[in-house]
Structures are given as C-alpha cells and as structure tokens.
Image (cartoon, rainbow, N blue to C red; front, side):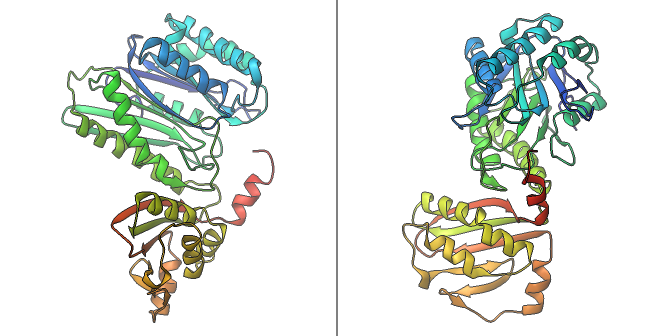
Length: 390
C-alpha cells in the first residue's frame, strides 16, 4: 500500500546528508517509462510560499498539466531563502531530470523541514545519480520514499485503494501546522486510471477541501503544502467526475486521519460537528474557532468536558447565534441544552473523555447548514517539540 501500488510507477528514498542525523531525506517518485502522466496539484495559499511551491506551479503551467514525477527532500523547507532558494530548487530538478533523461519542466519538486535556512543543494546534486539508480517498483521502494519525506512524523502515511480495475496509491507526511488550508504536509498520489488534466484538477480540489482542509492541529498554515496526483492511464479505465472525486476524497481522508493520529504531542483526536447554523460560513467558522481554541484543546487533554469553553467560542464567532437554542454533546452524553447545563451520567462521561477519540456535537438551532472538522488536543509534549527550532 504505497505510491508504487498502481501500474507503472517507480520510487526511491535514501539519505543524502540534508538531515545531519543521516536519516533518509530524499525521495523520488516517477513514471516507470519516464513518460509524462496527467498531473494535478493543490498548493498552499500562504503568500510566503516556498521556492519549490513556486517552481512546481510554474512547471505544471508550462506543461499544461503533465509531469513525469516529483523530487522531494525533507529536513529543509527551502522557504524564506530568496532568489538563491529558487536557484537551488531549479538546480536540483535539473540534475535529477538529466539523470532520468527527461526535460526539466517535467519534474516537480517539494521540500519540507526548517524554514529560513539555506538548502544544502550539493547534498542533492551529489546524490542524484544514486537516487535514480535505486528507483524500483516494489512495495519496499515505495515505503523507502515514504520514510524519506518524514520530518517530525513518527510513522509514514501510506494508503492503497483498488476498485473496479483501477488502483490508487499515496504517501504523505504531516504532523503539525495543520490548518487552515492543507498542512505542513506533502502528499503524492499515483493512479493508473485515465483522466485529463481539467478533470483531475477539479476532482483533486474537491477532495482536498473535504479532507486536508477539514483538519486542524495548531491553527498554523505552512509555507510548503503540496498535494500532487499523477494519472498514467495504464489501466485503460476512466471514471466520471463524481466517481473520480469520491476516490480521491477517500484517499485524502485516509491520509488526513493518519496525520491527525500522528499530530505532534496529541493524545486525542476529536471531531467537532456544528449543525443547524444559519449559513455555511457560520457553521465552518464556528467549527474552526472551537477546533483552534487553546482552552478547548487543553480541556480535551485533561479529559474535562468543559462545554462552557465551546459555547464561548461559538458566541464570539457566529453572526447568527442564540445561546438559548444551543445544545452540546460529547459522544452520546448531552451536557448542555437550551444554553444551560443538564443532568448527565458523570461516570459514563468521565470514562468517555478518557478515550483517544472524542466526538463533539453542537446544535445551533438557527438553520440547516452543517460543518465538521477534525482536530486534536494539545499537550506538554507539543510545547516541548515546538519551543525551539524543529
């Protein structure tokens, strides 16, 4: 279950020396025949986006939605590195593309890691030929690529879905800065289905919106977020727009859930469901305000169903809000109805709050719009991880 699961894709991963620990830090995913596949990408909207993001977007525009593969390094984001950063990203893919025997613009690039530190590009240039030589189509080859893109992740995120003669495989990394659009995350999706660039791009945007964009860990937006999908058509099967969107959404949701479970310092994964809002905007903004509340996150870490913090966040955010209509539940335990506390099975609720998955449901009572968001608690371990450059 990895990026090499669909027909016609190769991958490799190894250590180049970018990470001083010597851990794997360089990955390559390409079509096995080195021919360009249909490709779509969704990138961070952060205006401080990194050089690799700008270069990949530019290359996809030049090729009108086709690419042969992607080079990924971890350990250095190559962000906030000025013109030199763009030059380094360009040099990297020029070297690897040359070793692959393909035009430079057919290779995309992603980086993840420390911001504001010059990329040690020589490590990539010196390792390029070895990386290309180690390309393979086995499951282990895919796993090596997935391990090479990790930063603070504790495990590689991979998935495979095979259905109706079509296979999709994917790998991703991400454990923090997961909000509000994408994450400090990279995701590469491969599939053997047939699709044109317009169809693939539209389906990917919808899939990302229903998965990665509905996940929050700490309310921070990264500079490097990238989701790419390559479709090489080797299954000789195509899907209609709805079926393709559903398949990509299922893939992305699987990866997003893995990210939530591996979030830095998290002990609990939670969902907030806001129901009955007057507008879709109210539902989304309310859910996001609760998910990003440090007070709510701390309550979850302490296994404390302090619903007053939830009602406070909602009241400060939603334009159409009436406290007398609010109901709040943790799992099956209703703790607030009509804006006031209700009797509850304290022991049952206490046991529920000790679990690793917490579902919070809020009924607004103002309309018919709903929104869901996945988020995590915050712990001492999160502070320990992020109190210094990491």
